[in-house]
Length: 126
Image (cartoon, rainbow, N blue to C red; front, side, top):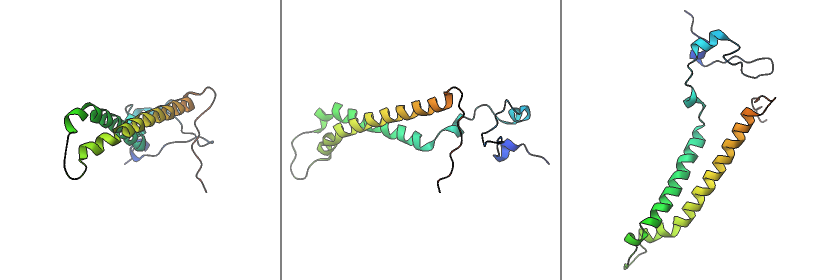
């Protein structure tokens, strides 16, 4: 009983260690599904996008609802005041994270689409 190589997770590489695409091997093109975008997503980058959007949205929401939540109180410092105090820092952190992620995506796109170069696999650090 023979299984296709794509089902196990192996990939073919050439003599330089570069992955051989489906265009070089027609049999491999039939076994691999075209929609492998989810497998190509870096989970750390996805979490950073969610965190950046949450920081930005939470900070803006704290600014928009500040008039309704901050009022006179007795005793300890209310949580709404603490949230309002950290709202500018959350907005700034969200903006910085989004700009950093956009630069990271631009760098990755440029590495993939640079003319005359191939993306080589990273060599392990010793």
